[in-house]
Length: 94
Image (cartoon, rainbow, N blue to C red; front, top):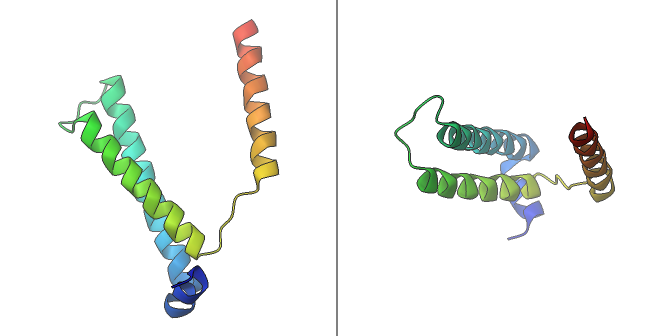
């Protein structure tokens, strides 16, 4: 079944809602990983298991975003990465 067929069945609004839900779950997992790495706000979760869940949620996010027709702008991504690198280089000089 194609992305369009899936989207036609569930509707664009539902596809967008699912993407938002998956985005939230992905972000939550990343925050939990950061807590584990920092050790500042302890959690009983193990990093490896939490990271495995993050990878799963990332896949869910990409899948649902693809169904919703969300595509990255690679040129814009490159430009933003270049600005990020420039900021890091400036910080390194200081």
